[in-house]
Length: 639
Image (cartoon, rainbow, N blue to C red; front, side, top):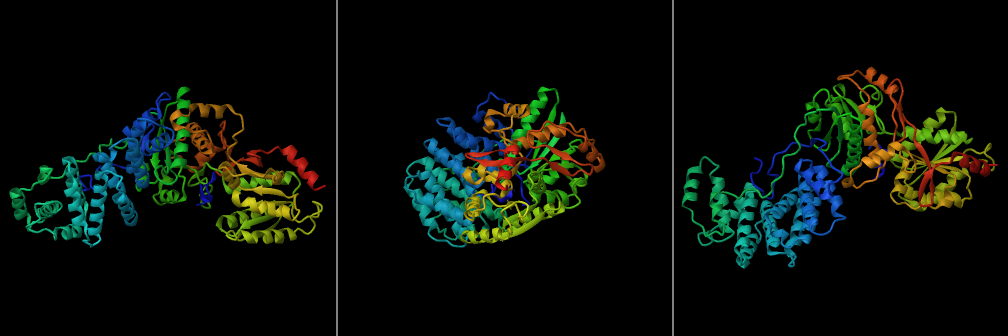
């Protein structure tokens, strides 16, 4: 995840046949009810069930995960599921990756029509340059089957004609066909060219048809050009009768004579996407970016939410969990189409989706608990609510602890970029409101060579560092990524300043959790906030982990806990349809829960506050702050 996608997000027709064109099936964007899942099913069975249920995002995720740890015959089935689901989710690069895994796992996979059609559809979703590059590489690869190279040659030729260049495409295709010794290969070449021409624009067909002569009209590829030309003429009232008569008289020596009667049907058969649900239990809705770049994060939230549904079902509470994909263009219409009793919605997870919901007036018709770090001024507790830690929550946790240690002056050392500037200004505002002094200094984020001097300038401003009572500051807030701490913190020590309390943001947790190395000698006096305590022993966390499906192959973390806690929390609210903001606020102010994430509380106006955990970097990771030990070490440093 990037800085904008940290554990605390910073505001941040149709063609009838399977040619290299649009999808041959019609399907609405995802809106699904959690289908039955079994802890005894294998990853392949879970992925297959998701595909059969029309839950394409989950099918793609499960198949992708399972492929990384699967061998043998099951790879073929998993790769096929992965390719089909990725295709339906508009993830062409993933679909092509799956096809390659499929090909490597099974001899002759790229000779099959289903493999070829998925390849064509995925290539059609790539940019023109990328598609031509990939097709060119395949065509030039003499180790590949004649089927695959023929497929790539046809694709390149038609793309060239669509760009208004005839080139040597007809000759290349003629040679491909002449060298094809077996009938199935010639059938494939005829069918695929016919399908791709059908998907091409009129200019491309006109250019290709211009090469037809009385001498070559019975030969491939010109015979296929002629068929497509006549077909298009049947669609024009001025030429329809003549073209139909010509087709009736036409006799071509084709490997697939049925092409004179029409194109072959699609080889891809997919279930219909999940249908609209009948909400037979208490309905809860998740509005999440299932099929886009945040899909893995959304999948964790869904996994936690589904675990909560299973836990609550065991206690006799029936829930209907509906997930709506905010990466689909009509997701707001999907929300509006839900029954009114589906009043409570978790999400969205991205500011753009929040803006779309606001523009469509959804906040006046549903109760949104957003997974965003902040809402627009005046909206929290009135238009929507927050179920997510804010930047203010981070800073309040740091200020509470540091003030209890006796810190009365702070420095902020921040990078000159959007996140650093925003966090610096917010820290100064909150610290000064509490009566503390703040000295702010910055550095150029793209010029690490300048950081040592910038650090020296910062520390020079500390007029009397020998004793805490005379020092300008005793703590430094460092709102930057963990990897940059490898230079910045040693720079502080270089100037023999070893007594400052170092305050990090949630970026530290992100970096360390992602495998960042910790030099423990620099971080005896260092803390940062987080909303998930891995080491914290708690029965509810144990229930969550036990309720996760083996097929999910995940360990509980903040995102999983977020989905789990949201479902359990929302299930207990008992809010009526069209509840007024005042009623929601009243319910929230008295709500309670055994939280797995850091506890959230709401005041009477509906504003959320999350009591974040505080951690210190230690060798191999980070650990919950021992406040007594930290107080002793800080006092000894400044005595």
